[in-house]
Length: 302
Image (cartoon, rainbow, N blue to C red; front, side, top):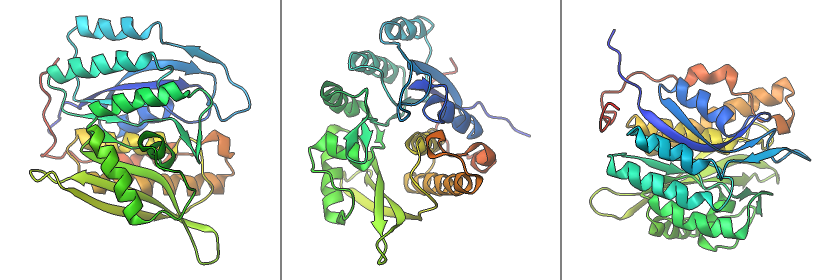
């Protein structure tokens, strides 16, 4: 059997001890996808912020020294995944790290611009943080905002449903103007004729190689249960894992949506509380890929 060196991803994200989100989801998912995960903690939470209360230890003061040590060691990565940052002061630190890694040949940066959901920002997120993320996404190749975050980034007016293709294409065009070549807007829902939400939709847009023109499409997945915490982290992790292995972007979005639907259905059947996130552990085997010959090669073997 031929073995290959797993691609390395620097994962900059918060850590929540309970509730299935952020680092505790991303690490096992990327590992199952044959990707080496190198975590960079931005904050440590006892549990995610959807609970009535939580403990948080902010890592803003430790982040520069953490990343500077990696620079001293000369570490390089095949990809950088950015999730929830603890404070707006972390944004320039992360931006500098991305720029330094670009100089070392890092071929991929995915940013999940975590700010809120269902039309509201999360509790730790300030307006200044949202403004800072507008600058950070300029450094990304791929971004995976939900519709709330896409509206926050572009200034579009949020609505819970009823988005037309033309409206979403216009939002994507504004997101591409920041710099990313690939955009996936998540969190869109479709209402059935009976009046209930029967599907969730991801709107995908990417620049055509060479021409620079935009190609858009939608992926539709049947709703398998109520909305749960941590689905955005799983979505971004799967897209990042496929990207560093040379996978097709639209196919990756479809894979992520199908996997999340499967896990939501199982969580509902098992009676897992919504605040506990989705039961993905039973299905990690579905993410284990064969070795693709077209996966990008590392810039060096550091």
